[in-house]
Length: 390
Image (cartoon, rainbow, N blue to C red):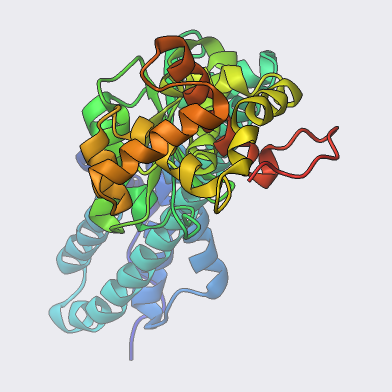
């Protein structure tokens, strides 16, 4: 028969609690009523009730919220357990002590599991809270929300420097980039390790958005290398210009996204497109109606050619894309050099403009580049009822 009570007076209880707290460095209050309750489990050969285990879970949560390391919390309980066991060895005979040992350590094991569960629960809650704050800050920054107390509080909480210079890089592929997926995780880990943690990597509108502090060298090429390491092929990278302040983050993001859109409109083949390289095209796009008139005025006469304007415009595009190199243009078009030269002469006859003349060449290239913009349906002036120029 087991005795109905353990020889554990108030003085002994206090001594065990104080020694365990001192040895572990954890607050004694995190023990709750563990010492007395586990002694009762040992004497009765019982296990902790669900109510007691839930209390240990709450103590685990409290420890996490107070910043107590899990190892210190478990050390607190283990120290109390072995000191309680040592007390039993000294105060009861061997047979009784042996009978108490199994339920005591089983109770200790159950308590440790409950503590860990509560600790993890609090950490998951803290992570969700931090992620929600971070997501709110990112959404506000990319949307260009006006600076207010709320934005300053969010930035302060995650350590984001609102007054600093930031640059946005946007990556797009034919697949939506999954939030917290392998692409984002890899880029975030590698990119912020190289450029510091003053920025962030997130997903928005199926894009991967990277915002770096300062102005990095070749950030587009770096991002391209990182994303293709996880998912090869099909990426287009848009790079915005560095700007200062929270409004600058939104501005750089819009520029990076616009660079990707314009690269598609212009049928550019380069995987990395910087906004500053497309500024001339942005200038062309400011007055779309005037651009349309210019394209029709300069290229319209080519419609009188046998077979239509298409082959001649294609020749101009290849000629300009190949830096005025007739041989390279011929290779690209799968034509002879003589055929390309003939077409260029024919363009001169029909338009009155020669690629050999600087002013004429500028006008022809402007019309060809502008035509690419106007040929994209989503680039049309919403106020215009005219069909695309093709």
